[in-house]
Structures are given as structure tokens and as C-alpha cells.
Image 1 (spheres, helix red, strand yellow):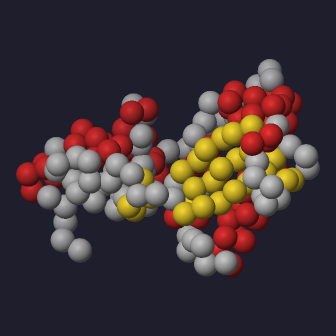
Image 2: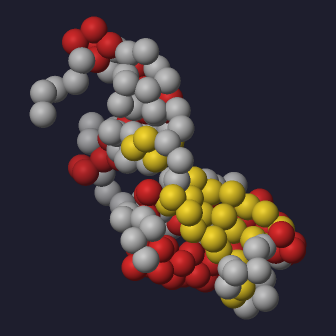
Image 3: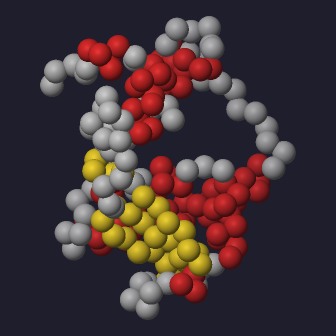
Length: 172
């Protein structure tokens, strides 16, 4: 998974050497634009409920930052289908390290239900913080060469900066 705009840009093979030198692309007309807009408005609404739950967890000192959290979403069937068809990593949109999606019927009694279609439970994420992506993951240190990186970041660094295996990272 790319972490920076430059890493993404390397794969696009654009004529400009750096993403910052490129012009903004023209927006294409989408035949399903109204449907796409409706889906993302629903996701924005879901995200606002998660952000509220994250803020409550911060206020109660359960977590400090949202990346220290695991969000468990209890969704009705239509919202679950929407999330499943998006084809994106919802953790990144919600800005949490770990995410679990369950049926609304499984929601604990003490979890608030929003709009009869969603309940959000926030708990501390399990694992260690990756030095690169800042997510709390259970696989940090699983690569023998990078004790402070998660497996995904270790793979990216190995592929793009193989010298880091022998030379290490810059000193802090």
C-alpha cells in the first residue's frame, strides 16, 4: 500500500517527475454519478457517527488519538451491503487502526444505536504503533529487518528502499 503521494506517482508513469508539478486532471462524467454521490453521502453520515463515538472515547481517556482505536460497527443489512460494495478500506476513511463489521442484531445493549441502522463501539486497538503508517497493528516487528514497522510498511520499504535493510533508517 503506498504511503505518500510520491509513491503513488511513481506507479502512474506521468510525464512530470513529481506530483507537485502536475496539473489537476479534468473530471470525467460518471454515468452513475448520482448513485455514487448517494453512496458517499451515506458513508459521510456513517463516518460522522464514528467520529462522535471516537470523541466520546477520547473524552473518557480510553484512547488518545483515533489511530489508537478499534471501531466495531454494528450495521443493518442495507448499510452493511453499502460498505461491502464500496471497495475501499473503510479503516482509512474512519481514521482508525482496526475495524470490525458485525450485524446490528449483535450490538451490545450498552452501545448507542444511530438512526436504527448503525451502532458504534470503540475500544483500544491491540498491538504496537507502526513508525511509518502510525496505525496500531499486531504485526509490528514481524519483519526481521524492521522491528518498528508493520508487515505492510516493511514490504513497501523493502521494495522501494532495499538499502534500508543493510544501512537502516536515518538517525532521528
